Image 1 (cartoon, helix red, strand yellow):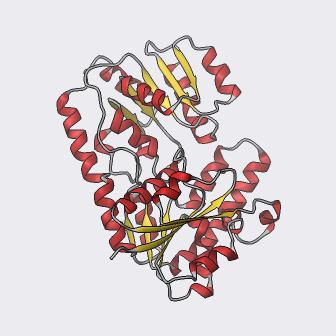
Image 2: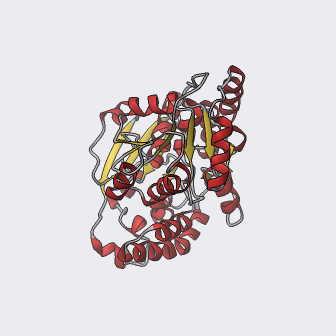
Length: 371
């Protein structure tokens, strides 16, 4: 007999083109392939309905997220208060199937008295108050900084609602350790992702690559650091690829003849850039969540230089070259630049990735925990 499961998503998880929805979409896809009948509930703001989701799931319901400013002045975090729906509650009451909440964003349902007695699990995508604090520290606008610090305070206080969940599913080992120190019944299941197999070219590439959403402050600060401290006046060419680069970044890159900007590449173009690079470089100053772009690099690229904050809690340290400052990155670049990526290295990376980040194995564990 097929199992049924309600999944409540903070956003419409298709197209799967940013971190959080990538995990949600490929989780749904894997569960459906295992025969789980998914009843998907999506908060909608800016994304359209999806025939792809409707073809995978048993049912899909959409609820308009209320993004009005009134939620800024409530005691609940904005990301929670703006996702409230009586219609959603009524739909969940039509049966007694278990429920999976995606992110703290959707966890207001853990306080809904009408759902008392239901098995409700929560997937934590981040330690949200830490994430918002880091965003605030990276932000230059006073108003945005104030909002982010205020939201971080609300999120830290609101986090206690997770104690009402039957099960917490952490997305990284760091997050698992944090939540296990505050709550019971916490397990680690890595992010679900689109990669079915390793697609790495052997041999050598001709450039280094940094990729990410270039409109996000975290990524803007990271690439600005790399350009200013590592690649400016370097003998090594760097390609910077990503969505919506800021004007300041365009000007900085234009002043460096060895650096090229590829704005808004298609998925196919980005794959080619990762696949053909000699070194994929990725650093972050925010040790929060799992950086799914790290998996993209490891499944499809040769050498990967990353800092400890990028790797925190991923269990992927052994597959990367760890460098935590500009001088260390420069040294590693010099060591790796003319070194071919060997067949043996491809085989080892394949073995480790299939062991740690195997969607099929991980979804079986997830189904056992939450249904």
